[in-house]
Image 1 (cartoon, rainbow, N blue to C red):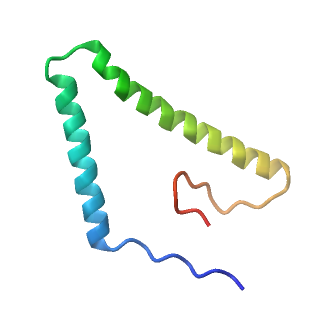
Image 2 (cartoon, helix red, strand yellow):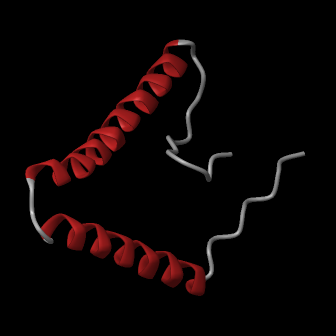
Length: 82
C-alpha cells in the first residue's frame, strides 16, 4: 500500500520560513559589512561551496542509481524525500 503524499506547507509556514530566512541573511550581511574585513566573507564562501558540492554529491547518487537501472522521480536535497 503506497504511503499518503505529505501535505504541502501552509501559507503561514511558508511566510514564517521566508521571514526567518530574510532576517538571518540580513543579520549575516550586517555582520559582514560592519567593520568590513575580507576574512568575514569566508563564511559566505564556505556556505556557497557547501551547497554547490552537496548538489553535485546528490547528482552522483542519481547517476549511480540510473546506472544500476533504478527509476528516479526526482532528486531531493534536504528533508522532503519519499
